[in-house]
Length: 118
Image 1 (cartoon, rainbow, N blue to C red):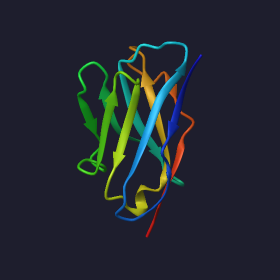
Image 2 (cartoon, helix red, strand yellow):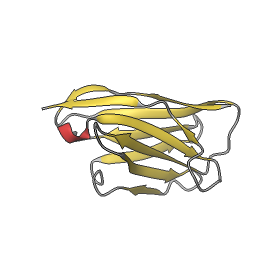
Image 3 (tube, rainbow, N blue to C red):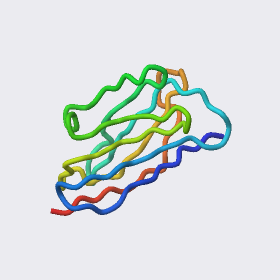
Image 4 (cartoon, helix red, strand yellow):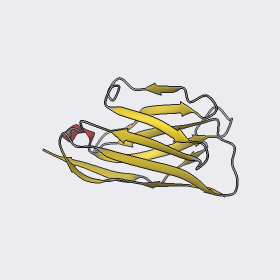
């Protein structure tokens, strides 16, 4: 069994920053890529960013490009999402996900709430 454990959410004022973390726990899992998503109130879950574990190559949704940065620490098996210049519309539950060489998201975190006040 693999669980993804997220942390770092919270309440921040507009213009502020937060850093989310996510790491797998449980049995050992091979990581091809990890990603971040979010679900805002009343909206569908939306892709934010992904990072290929071996190369560090990353890809972003246009909505967060230039404000959010995905990174990983191979030694700690942890993926991060640095979020800067936060806006009230960034308020959502943020999820990390892991692709274990299946070309789909095999595991999901439980979600962490991010609330940006105006």
